[in-house]
Image 1 (cartoon, rainbow, N blue to C red):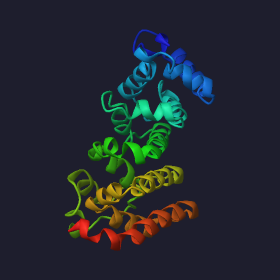
Image 2 (image 1 turned 45 degrees about the vertical axis):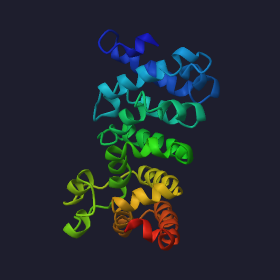
Image 3 (image 1 turned 180 degrees about the horizontal axis):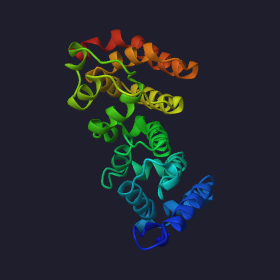
Length: 246
């Protein structure tokens, strides 16, 4: 593992091969358990923390040149387990915060891995919603911008949003081409919106309006279904929660 972490002390090609091997190993429960060090209380999550640090300190727009790009796949694998999600969502380490900040990477491998990891972590929204919402400054742009369509939003719409959303949506943007990323973001939003406090938080950033306009631009049938699922959830609960929005 130490060979992987050294930013300048090992052959990048070797580090990349080892990361790819680890990506394959973490498709197995035993591989995930070893990486997470679940049987070692005092150092549980240490390997993962170092791996995320290397992932976040390096970057490349080209997947072929990205030594740590496949860490994104490892994170998806790890976050499929309850232990992995627990470690990622611990406020003390801020691991999920570090990961979310990679959502604007131009590298599609990283971008897809981040959205998949965040989606998986949102399965803990019933227990960890407050920890997720503490990251609102980064969480909402990561989840809402990919599904916001490419239109320039009106001042009336952006005036009801935090600056990190309003600034990005006040002009036309390049759409997120990968439909799987858009679908993962919508699934994450749905899991958050299943919780009353999550719905309230989504309304507070004008999230439903973003979803409405994003849906108008969507053409992929599976992604449209994901829009419709969260839309139905929000509409069905809107009347009961209307007093909370005043």
